[in-house]
Image (cartoon, rainbow, N blue to C red; front, side, top):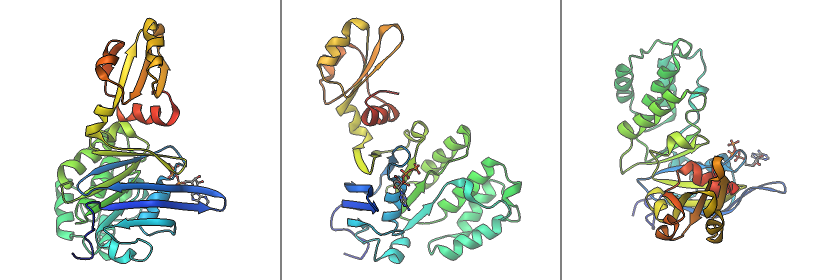
Length: 293
Ligand SMILES: Nc1ncnc2c1ncn2[C@@H]1O[C@H](COP(=O)(O)OP(=O)(O)OP(=O)(O)O)[C@@H](O)[C@H]1O
């Protein structure tokens, strides 16, 4: 077994991970695991602990508990870890004065697995030339530049922290589509934090909901439909639905209500109204706030 293989099948494993700031716990003894070959959405409201968790697993800050990434402790093996990790913060951070060539020089200098020729091929496709300044690029071109940089790094773990902040919906969708089509394969794992659940959910294989420093839910999306059911009822079925102990309830116009159930029998729920699997966004709100978006 080489240094980057883990004893278990998991790429990242956290046990009792805690981060304290004086008397506040930004991470409160969390347990979680991420398998290789997955695209995981780390989703939580402001101040939930997303950035704290990313910083911990990237070795950027100290914490208590046990956290392994490729079997390595990020506190002591950050350098070795970074050979297989690519971390990109939001796409709006490039300084406007910088030229494409300078950005490429920088990434080449800091990342051992950056392939310059590959990056240039992606940029050619996007018709971004090397002397162009960021200030001369449209938002869409900046997205392409970021993608070219990301996709030219042969990292086994890609960590994206709010990658599309500041972009319009078309460019946000374009970013995720290309990431999925041109970058992702089963040897890679992508961890994305975002508030914009709707547009990322179509590419995710798993979600981790985090709130107040705790994991509220961790589930692969392909089993989510077996566990959670959303039902739209008319007014006369509301009491019957409540009796089945939904995890959330929301009133709708014309006396209708939307309920989300955890682990209830779908056939029984079908008698109450229109049944479907909740979206990730609906489930997120139901899990965290007890009402459906
Ligand atoms: N350096 C720090 N000193 C003190 N408290 C901090 C520090 N960094 C984060 N916190 C606190 O830890 C908690 C989690 O913060 P974190 O930045 O991880 O949240 P987040 O989920 O990334 O939020 P956002 O979506 O708003 O970026 C918050 O209550 C925050 O105030």
